[in-house]
Length: 513
Image 1 (tube, rainbow, N blue to C red):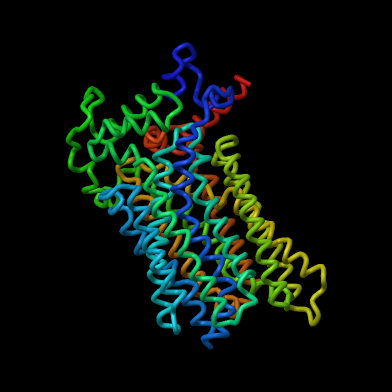
Image 2 (cartoon, helix red, strand yellow):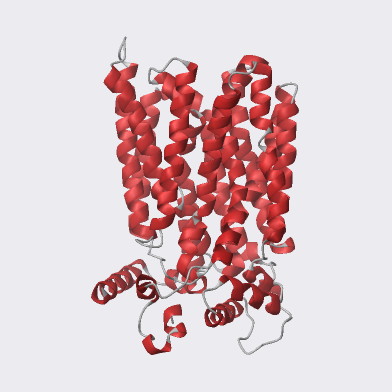
């Protein structure tokens, strides 16, 4: 039964989506503040990604290193984040979601200090490795915590926040490039990388005022504490009791148990989870494939290659002045951040599926336009101004299209569709796929475009993204308005059944309007 039917006995037949449209639920400031605080940990990855695009120019000049070494420095943080995300799931089940966020912040702070003080390539690489582990923790835990703390009516909006802060971090990194670019080369890049440790330290203390995830508390048998958190984060006390009952059922605790502290079945206390993930039931297998595919294809579209190497791409497009390249890069960051903010307001209004398909379609068109414009520039002795302008325009439209759906929805969808007992480790698998793809692109993009040409590389990204659109169209049901505990039932049905169910829900919504 949907949550709307339980909370409003006089209209029990009205689905949750219609209650949202009628505005019968109040906004929850407490859950929003908690989600914002948790999501700020994602700013660490964004800042590092953005700042390296410009810092790489000065690092190469100061340390006299080669392009392959630059590729290693750029990509290694994402490869090493695999270690962080791999361990983060188990550690978050052990120490809790909240303290895992603190742990991520402390690790990244240590990495930032190493990078800012690095005397040579070797020590800088060590700093990148340490920071990468912290990034892996942050990327896994932010969407998990936010999905578990948010009420169903605002989960899409709140779970989009990690992507908002990633993009905000990218923009801050770009601004840092411009702010320190006028300093001597041996000082500029150190400040660019080192100041990234300041927000991580502040965040480590700020997180301590947040509540623990109610679903993690239930997994530990702390039902009394979980109830207190749910009362604060849900839209009503009745909804809090309903959510608690559903979570208890999901982890194998009888609904009739009312004690504040209980013993949780051993297999639901974090043990045996990897065995269930590696030998999944059909519904869990379907969820894992979809979740991992979303995270993988988001990076396979080439977005991080563009963000990490945007000055190089603009240079290939015919922009030669360093200040102009960095200025155009800042425009990319502003565009990316603005449109991901738009996505946060749309994801719960029009749904995950239509927003994702529209976004991916726009990415394909923009990649084709960018590749075509780069081809004109690459084959011209003097690049025509219209082609240069088209390159910049297609780049901005690419990041806008990506940010409005393809960027945030993997974090929303990938964290909400997994069963509570598998969520932390399941999301860590998706994040690992995302970071692996990002790292591979970061470490090979310069070599790739030299082998395939710059336009050939973006034509390749367009082909991969077209394949992703077809997969998403065939495989992803709509999850808007569903509670986290209802997801397993949604994915236990066949593709044809969920499509028929989705059509029925849409018809009901139209009749209500």
